[in-house]
Image 1 (tube, rainbow, N blue to C red):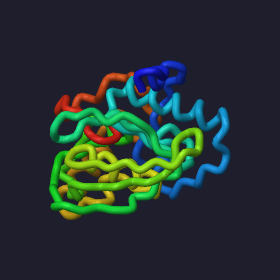
Image 2: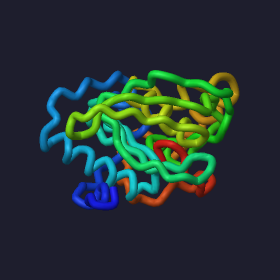
Image 3: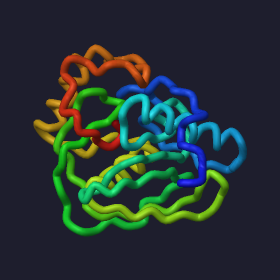
Length: 201
């Protein structure tokens, strides 16, 4: 990245789709055209993610139902991981299952303890069609699993059960953003959680 442009600098900040939007709840389509439109989408994803202070963002979160996500996320050792994956596949999870706080830009200000493996491997392609493999541990592994879920039409709330799920859904129904798109740079609602970033935030 040292000799390349800064991700997102040429991108456009797009409104974020919110819980309940149909585009968030359906599997995304494979990318078949690795041309300028894909490159522009990746730039928009980075620009929107940074504007919203997130660590990862999937294409359907800005209304594009295609299999692409970007990330700029630390692991548990605070090592930075920066990149994107086109047509990602979560090919391996391992290690221990950890319940950790997880939030999402499509549910601003909310979070819940969500179980994830602490090791993950994702394969896919770069924006130019080159094969890529991304390996994550700890918090970064959580981010990779979170973004892959988005592209399958899932959100972290789908992994919750019992009182954790009921609590998040109740708070979402009462939130000021309920039922509408939210500008990526907009301030969070009064019920916003801790400042530490979470996948998709």
